[in-house]
Image (cartoon, rainbow, N blue to C red; front, side):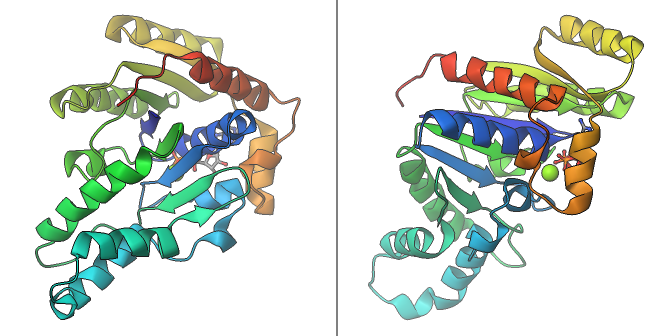
Length: 258
Ligand SMILES: Nc1ncnc2c1ncn2[C@@H]1O[C@H](COP(=O)(O)OP(=O)(O)O)[C@@H](O)[C@H]1O
Ligand SMILES: [Mg+2]
């Protein structure tokens, strides 16, 4: 399995990049799991499969929390695993999808989370590629619900804040010992050569390879406005073509058996 985590400041284009990665990678292998790990995100909508989503992982955790005492001697890990397979994993034609949902509410979720961690780890091993649309703070990684990422793709726009968040994510990924092999950068919604140069300088200083510089793209804005999935963007657009190249690059990266 190869885990690709897409991170970055909110609004930079994480969901766009994640959805296109899922789209292109799943054209090459049917063993893909898309994970929506940003409570603010809309990966199912971006992929055009929002109707397929039944329960989020967070909802199953809540259910577990309230029914735990009634389970008696029943194997709780098996219960969780069964529920996740039956109600949280959406089987779309070319890939599976898991929505993490909101973070836990009041109370102690340590037991539920520790069980979840084991179940998720086993579940993820069934897939060749796992693409995770994350949040800027990498919360699921810091709480260890998901414990590793092989490749981290940081998305930034041409704002200072976007770059500052990119730097913080890089530091966080090291602190959390995510065991990653490489961190890459995708610059998105870039409208000037000057901005591109600033980002290239930043990437050089940070020692991060840039996988793509994507322009502002009318067709992305249009599908968004029409409420269509991002996969419906113009096939001749720069964003489409460049993200296809990024996906091919990812598909050529070494795979490590875990
Ligand atoms: N290259 C682009 N050109 C035009 N609009 C874009 C581009 N990238 C993203 N957008 C728009 O910007 C908004 C935020 O993108 P999104 O992928 O949801 O960001 P994030 O997941 O990081 O919050 C969306 O409305 C999206 O349609
Ligand atoms: Mg998003």
